Image 1 (cartoon, helix red, strand yellow):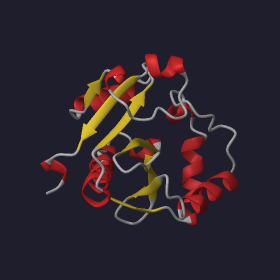
Image 2 (cartoon, one colour):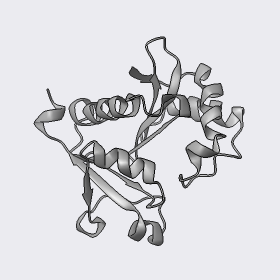
Image 3 (tube, helix red, strand yellow):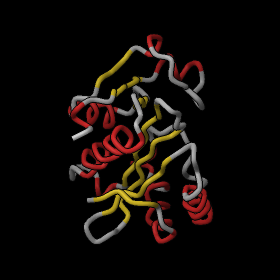
Image 4 (cartoon, rainbow, N blue to C red):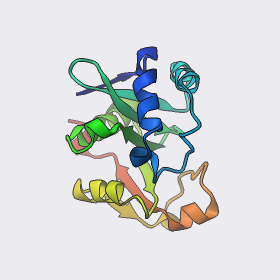
Length: 170
């Protein structure tokens, strides 16, 4: 498994997970309306985007499995996001991709903290983050941006935070 720059060849596999109700049912975006052109546009825009880092998760044969991102990049922090297709679920790929993007954010970009949130209905994601030892936080105690979230989502979603540590700088 590796993470790499998104490529246009990833668009078809990206659209597959976007149209898979089992994958997107607990996500806040409306992926069902996305087209192959939307995927290609997202990929092209990712190449020159200085506010977000979107990377492909690929297997050892360079087949696209999902997308892992650091969004709303600032000097100090970013928001983490990940989505993988159904065929990669339960394989450990998500855990590896997440560790790699966190390492990249902390070691190579120099971020101090990376945060993310999960709908309380997304039991699969909550179980994954908790099982992998990520830290839930109380949102009111932190000052990072909650760009793109409604007041209700900010209050109801489960929030996580990872801070830069020696674990990520080895």
